[in-house]
Length: 399
Ligand code: JEH
Image 1 (cartoon, rainbow, N blue to C red):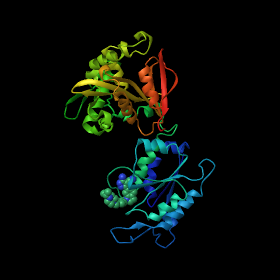
Image 2 (image 1 turned 180 degrees about the vertical axis):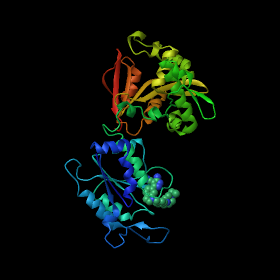
Image 3 (image 1 turned 30 degrees about the horizontal axis):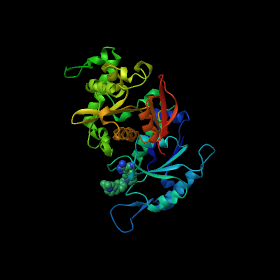
C-alpha cells in the first residue's frame, strides 16, 4: 500500500519507522512518504496559517500550501496506485474512525493523510480536493487534540496491521476484540503465582491451569460478558432497536441460561418430521452441549415476564471474515406465527458489524416455516449444509 502524509511536523510521524509498521515499510509492504507542508509555502517565513475571516480565536491553515502539497502528491501517481489516493483529513468533526473504517481503508491501494494544526484548514481546500479525489474527514474520538498527527499515527497503525504480511499471525487478526459484539477476556502468562513487590501472591485463575479446554472457553466467555456489562454496556443493548422485541427483556446468554435454552430447543423441534438424529444436533443437544455452543456464538435471549420465549445466535464466520452467521432462531411454539421470528432475524442481522457483506443461515431442509420466513427476508438456498438434512441460505447484506 502507498501512503502519503502531509504535516508541518513531519518528525511527528518518525514513530512509523518503529515496530511492525516500520518493519513492513522496510520490507516494502507499505510505501510511506511524509511531506513537510512548509516546503509548499514560498514566502521567507514559510507561512502556512493566517487569521480567520469573520473573527474568532486562533489561526487557520491557508489554502495555497495545501493545494500545492496535495498536487505534488497527486503528481506522484504510478502504475500501482491508481489515479488518486483516498484523502483522509483527521478532524474533531469527522466521521468516527473504527475497526470497520480501518478494514475499508485497508482495501485502497493509495491513502493520503492531511494533518491539520491550529483551528484547522481553510474550507476551500476540502472543496478543491473533493474535485480531484475521494475525501473523508475522520475523527479518532470525542476529545480534542492539537492536530492531526497523533490521529494519523493511530490510523496508519490500525490500517497497516490489516495489510497482508504485516502482522505475522493471521489468527491474531481473526480473533479481534469486539467479535460477537463483546470485549476481550483477561490474559495471563508465567509465573502461575506472581509475588509482587509487597510480597502479595497473585495467582493465575485456576481454570486456566487445568487443561480443560471447554472449561477455559466457558470461563473466558463469562469474563467477556462481565467486562462488557461493566465497561461497555452500550454493546449489550442493541436489542432495543428492534420494534417488535421492544416489549421483551433482552440479554446475552451465559452458561447459567444453558438449561433453559436446552428446554426451548427441545420445545421448538418436538414436532419435527425428520428424526432428530438425521440432522443438525439442536434437538438432541443436552445442556452441556448447549453451554459449549454459547462459547463459540453470542446467543441473544428474549424473555416475557421472566419466561424465555425466543432466542437467536450470531457470530462472524471463523473462515470468511465478512460473513455474518445467524443460527438457532427459536420461538416458543405457543407464540409462533406472530412475527417474533422475523423480528429475531432482524435483530440478528442488525448485530452484524459494518464490514459484513454476506448474511448466512443454516436450517433443517424440512423446516418449511423457517424456510418461508428466510426466503421472505431475501435469503436464497445456496447449497446443502455441513450436516445431513440441512441447507445453507445467504443473502447480500444490502439489497
Ligand atoms: C484536532 C485534526 C487539526 C482543536 C479544536 C478545534 C471541538 C467541540 N479526535 C480528534 N480530536 N481532535 C482531533 C481529532 C482527530 N482526528 C484533531 C485538530 C486537527 C484533528 C487541528 N486540530 C486542533 C483543533 C475546534 N474545536 C473542536 N469543538 C466539539 C469540543 C470545539 C471547537 C479544532 C481543531
